[in-house]
Every structure is written in structure tokens, then in C-alpha cells.
Length: 199
Image: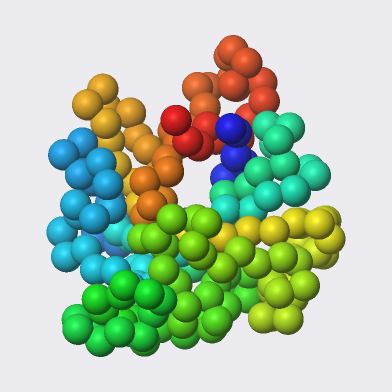
């Protein structure tokens, strides 16, 4: 399945600022091939925590008519509140959480307060809360205007970056679904654009 990767305006401006800084301390981390699943990265906790560096908030969105790749799929990465920290042993996220994150909804295109409070992305998709366009709009994201679809629906995920044994970079969701960028401008994948997500 091909997904178009979309960054929210706030995350894009944050990453542009980080890219221009000389020290590079806030650059996104690409984890080694020895950490092919999010639950293997250092200090992993089941919570809604994201820091725009090692872990990102995002959504898997479906039925987006103008998505590159022709399948109507978008992966949207958004900006997470950097002001707050994760606390261990505090359960304020969804089922099975072993930590809490006190961050707020600070990206108007990103996760809502409801998505933060109920996040449980370590569970299978069929057990989780999928949102339709009305739910997104009720929670504060004008997704119909932005994505041009009243039929859209989606699911929030946390994402991270890692390499594989061949040195390729992968964008992976907490539940293990992942994809690697399509190869350049040549071949079928290059002509379609977007990102190959899933294997």
C-alpha cells in the first residue's frame, strides 16, 4: 500500500528550524537496525509521549482522494507539545499504558486532547478507536477542508525512524506497521510518489 507522507505546518516549520541549527542536538533520531520495533528503543513506555525527535505523533488517514500514490492513503505526522514529560507508573492513556504524558494539544492539525488522553497504539488496530471526519471536526481539526474528504477516517499512531540491515530508513508505527520512502523518481514507485508503508 502506498501512503503519501504529509507533515503538519507546525511540524514542518519545527523541522526546518532544527535543520538550520548548527549543533544538531534536536535533529530527528534514526534508530539502529537492532531496534526494528518501537518497544526496543531506549526508555520506551506505553504512553502518548512524543518529543518530535525520537517519537512523533501521527495519523493513518484513509479515503483521501488527492493522496499521491492513487490509493487514498495518507500518513500525517504532527507536532507534539515539547513542554511536558513522561511519568512512569502513571496510567492516563489507553488500555495497557505503563506511563502518562501531560502534553497538551498544541498543533491545530495534530492530535486532539481526546486522542492524547485515550491513545493505545501498542494494541491491534481492530481494538482501537478509529475516527471519522465528524469526530475529527468535533475534536477541533477541520479535516474536511484540509483533506477535501467527508468520507475520510483515520487512526492515531506514534511513529519513529530506524534503519534496517541494508542501511535503508524506515518510518514505523508503534504497532509494527512500517514503510520506507519510494525510490527516487525512477520506476513505478517513483512515478506514483508517496511512501510505501507496510510489508
